[in-house]
Amino acid sequence: MKTIRWKHMLLSLATTAFVVACAPKNVPVETGEFAPDWESLKQWECPEWFKDAKFGIWAHWGPQCQAMRGDWYARHMYYDGHWQNNWHKEHFGDPSEYGMKELIRDWKAERWQPDSLVALYKSVGARYFFTLGQHHDNFDLWDSPYQEWNSVNMGPKRDIVGEWAEACEKYGLPLGISMHGSHTWMWMEKAQDYDGNLTKADGKGKWWEGYDPQELYAQCHEHSKGWEREGNIHGQWGWQNGASLPSEEFKMKFQNRVLQCINDYDPDILYFDDTVLPFYGCDDAVGLNILAHYYNRSARLHGGQQQVVAMGKVLEEHHKDLMMWDVERGAPDRAQEKYWQTCTCIGSWHYDIAIYNENRYKSAEQVISMLVDIVSKNGNLLLSVPVRGDGSIDDKEMAILADIKAWMDVNGSSIYGTRPWKTFGEGPSAEASRPINAQGFNENNNYSAADVRFVQRGDTVFTTIMRWPEVRTYTIKALGSASPHYSGDVASVELLGYGAVPFTNSPEGLVVTLPEENTNAIAPVLAVSF
Image 1 (cartoon, rainbow, N blue to C red):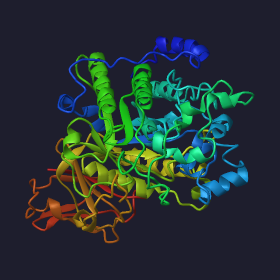
Image 2 (spheres, one colour; image 1 turned 180 degrees about the horizontal axis):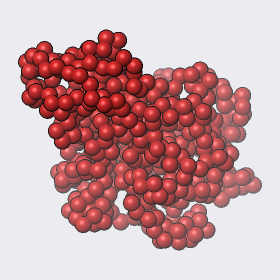
Image 3 (cartoon, rainbow, N blue to C red; image 1 turned 180 degrees about the vertical axis):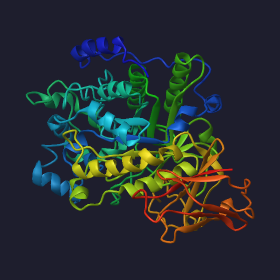
Image 4 (tube, rainbow, N blue to C red; image 1 turned 60 degrees about the horizontal axis):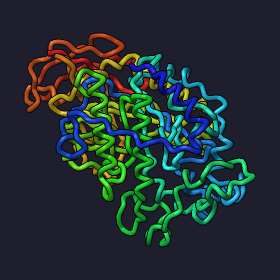
């Protein structure tokens, strides 16, 4: 792991005083073996440490969590009639007077303890950690000289990314940072009807005097055509069909912010909440510059071998040669040749108190089922545990994490460091077709005791029965001598957390006898040796 460099500490002291008045120079794109073009970047390979890690936890946490009313709050608070807009007006007032900038002002994160949280996440079984870098709200969660609206200048007045990074270094967890700010240009357009067109001159005598709201809202531009005015409050994800195209200044500012963040915190993983890369479809250069810089820097710091992962969404096959495919709230229904990741959340991406009150969190059983399925298909799971505005997590989330930990403490050897077997699984869910919708969104899979998943490490095949069967004599078809996946007669079978169990080799399958009492609350895992 890396030490946060002294140059960053010195930069913090220096830039805080003059960043509003003096714009820093563009961050140079690091040169090396990786050029900023599609072909050169295909030299990238997913590092083995990431393939071994399997499970990460994400704090998708920023000023929008202050309202504790769910995801996309900074956008929907400006939409008349939307439930978040109605709630906002009832509790904060009209968005023209109390807009996103005021939500930032009042976000203090007074109970945030990154050291304790990272220690907890590691104990639960996470092998990497993600922090939000900035969301579509355009607010940087680090000491950013390229974005005056950042968490050191206002709100908590703390370096959120930096403190998470220090905790990750202390506990030996690789650090991931997610970048979502390329979408601000369109995402915040409805704010134009309220406070989105304010400028620095309008701040005289206000709490934000000296700061330019356009650095945050980026809305002094023509509104996109068609899609939003027709009632589509979710807008569009790409840069087509009437989208207002971002200015060169906006794109360069985003590039500088990401490159500076890379240089100061050396994240092991970068996540772009974009189709492929930021501004893909209207300007490929920004994303390619960032990848080249990121990979070249990593190679320089690791003896010529890059050791980092960059990921984006809705990738075509040729994109998967130069970065990793991330699937949001879902998974492909078949194993993948190239390594990939699912990102999902036990609740809403931004904290929503209604999900707590209505007991709508994912259970530990749901999380473990997803993890086992994803790992069998050659992927990782990144799990968001929503954080309240004050920086704490609630008691129901703590209970879910405790249940995940209880299973992982016993069965983690069937997850970490494994690789796909000859087939990822058997049973109804393995045979079903569950197509991905856009970024993903197909995760509502119901597993039963008829569903089995396989992975291997060395000579051991770990076989997870996705639910405890009622009948304790169980046949695993893929391990039978008549199966196309037959690997030889089985020599021993161990139920993790219990010990050896009786078994019989047969053409129809491996027949095992499970103990009468369940040894965990979720699913049994068998370590099968040949």
